Length: 366
Length: 246
Image (cartoon, rainbow over all chains, first blue to last red; front, side, top):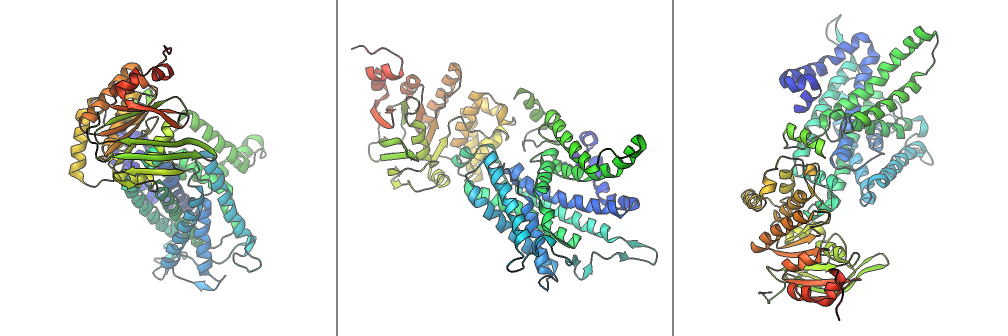
């Protein structure tokens, strides 16, 4: 719960209760405000929540266990394609979500083990390169497995995925409450995703303070010392990869259901980098920071897109910089500023039992 | 002096260790009896740390026997060796820099689940290391080198080891601080701990140790009581910077 208060730094330190209530209220009414600005904005919020789930999962690997993973989006792809295989006309299977989603998570976890096993001895840059390769391998497989047997339908992707049916209730239909009042399906998706995010935060929070979480923290700080205090570093690292992947798999399944369509191009290297940027930008190892980072970095480019064009036209009379170019430019600028001003992220992680004043006092001396 | 001559706590028989093609340790024999402080000295690259890492299980041995408490543990992975009572304080201290001092110490008891025992051992470590107790809530990475070394020793003690392996506890520390560390080591020995100490600071190590081994080029070239080695002209010339007087 402290993460909620931290998300609004000024209020959070003065009145944590009010800050918490503010963040909760904002989370609940955000889609209702967005829907006034148009459905596009609700869709953007939905995607933001998917990114939050991805960032939370990646944070498990990068932030908790200290294993740099540049191919994380592959697990998202595994989850999404599991949904596509088991709940679409492609193979004619239409399994319910409570089977498909866990299966997607399971396959992603297996993929995590497959990635984890060969890279156990690698660290830092080397690990990053191999995981990057893994992400690309998965994408290229998705792209080319339409021949000789058509499994993934290649670059065209798979269409008409089943939407999310919660106990016979189709989330993708607008909910008609009275003649004149109905709830947009995008808003419904928002709340469903929010539930998943809250569930993920709860699970990850418990993991972090558990024996497993402490083991990861030890490996992150010093692997030899971790071995020396009796931690089975091999199993712990494999566990980090597969558990991180699990969250990616769940998010991928939800993405498939929400989008109704999957294709390899959604799982490019840029997406992996984007998720990693969210984790680093928000504050590696700090759940609140990671969430803020994911929301901020998925909303900012969209805000930019909708303001940059009219502003440029008003000033120069024509568009000088394409919003897509501007986006990369500003993201890079944001990262550079971040590294200079707050190298540990917007909301840095802190040692668990330490009193805040000691933790900040210690930083200066280091 | 070794008082218990029955069975050694730790015994290395013709142990060989290699990094790929390069033979770093070329067959050494070494014994450690209960309650002893034994030091392993030698120049850089003699194979001291390699030997220690092989004993703790972070490096595999190529040949030979590694007997601990009567069993050959050569094939046992590192985390299981700790459960048998072998604790390593790695070279360069190996502190968990982003955790607090208390968390670091508690990490030492990672494999244990006896809550009362852990709390009692924590208290014991606090009385042994009063400096550490003052800084429990501090992030360990912000401690001085000497304090970090003390935390590392305290952490190793929390696994309740039968044998403590210390790798260069004096590395990078000021002489005054080194003395403090050796005082701590002596206290630990007085409490009945068996210690194998790897040191570059041969003079100090031999002064405190009951016995010593001298390593050179992957072999043990000399061994004896601390006092005898300190007096040995070859040791004096090679490691204590004195001219050999023939």
